[in-house]
Length: 121
Image 1 (cartoon, rainbow, N blue to C red):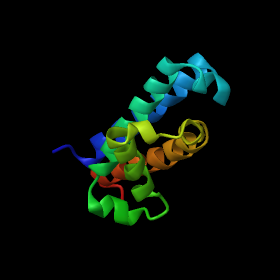
Image 2 (image 1 turned 60 degrees about the horizontal axis):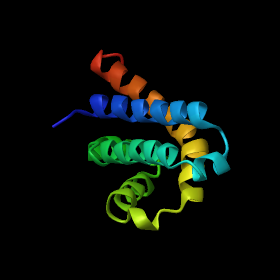
Image 3 (image 1 turned 30 degrees about the vertical axis):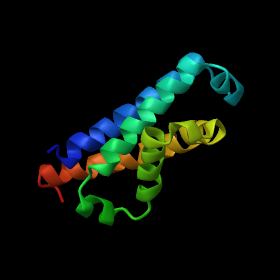
Image 4 (image 1 turned 90 degrees about the vertical axis):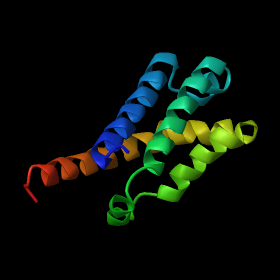
């Protein structure tokens, strides 16, 4: 089983990938909605993001109630099992507006985990 530090690093990496896709393909919803490759790249990264979140320890998630854990995992379930029901508007808003916020939160969590591992807290 992978540890929380590895999983949080993976989460941040998926955030970076999503941001990279937005920079590469375009920063507007219409471009996203009209480009299947763009959609697939972002959706795959969101699914991986959700899978990593789903595998975090209960202890870590309980320490951070400010994060919508069930919403993240719920999106992953929707992508993996009900992909035909995806709302591209909502996917876009998640990628463009929520992912940068999540990235900041997970960077702070990683700093906390690294400090704990180094005995600084």
